[in-house]
Amino acid sequence: MQVRMRMMLPAAAALLIAGCVTINIYFPAAAAQKAADKIIDDVWQLKQPATTGGSGEQPPPASAAQPVQQPAPAERPGGQSKP
Amino acid sequence: MKTLWNPILAVLPVLAALLVLASPAGAQAQTQTQANIDINTPAINSIKSSMHQRWTNLRAYFVNGAVGLTHDGFIALHDASHVPLPQRAQLNSMIAADNQDRKSLYREIANENGHPDWENDIRMTFAQRWIDKEPSGWWYQNAAGAWVRK
Image 1 (cartoon, rainbow over the protein chains, first blue to last red):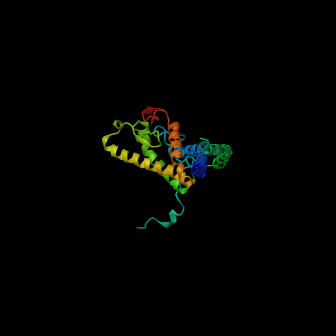
Image 2 (cartoon, rainbow over the protein chains, first blue to last red):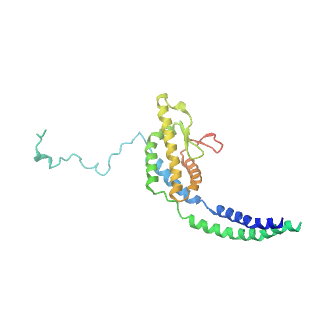
């Protein structure tokens, strides 16, 4: 009887150690939350304009001030009579 | 009787030693893995852009309450009465496709960071953040699975 108990000791110790190892695998909750926030912001993009309809007409603002219709110089000498 | 107690007494110091060792080791593991979760990989980016593309169509259904967030990181049909019959099949397939993307997203984040076993934790982290970031008026499921209007 006593001998059998002695033999179980290493097994019990091994189990304990294995248990501790699994407990120590740690999930980085804060980093995961930051990652989730980033992805959610990218997918939903709720913070940006968010107005569909109403005054949603904002064409390219940089070139809006200048007249866009400037005939390209290359077009003129080329002639228009190409099929 | 004495022979019965012997092995138990022998285990006690081992237990105590393990407890002492476990806490600093755990703390060390925390500082090591706390570093970061990498989400900038081609696979994750492509899932993201697929979801964003779908979102331009899906968004209206969140706004009118037809669709809501589940408590476990997915989306589900909440109230189909807001949806004209001809559009329901399309909406259902959109929901299914989005949930497929979400599943891949959670799995991919876990895998890319070397911990496939984190998939559930990541999914539940997302579940909470989707709901936190949801604008008021939209719907979500609480932990009991009941629909709640935010």
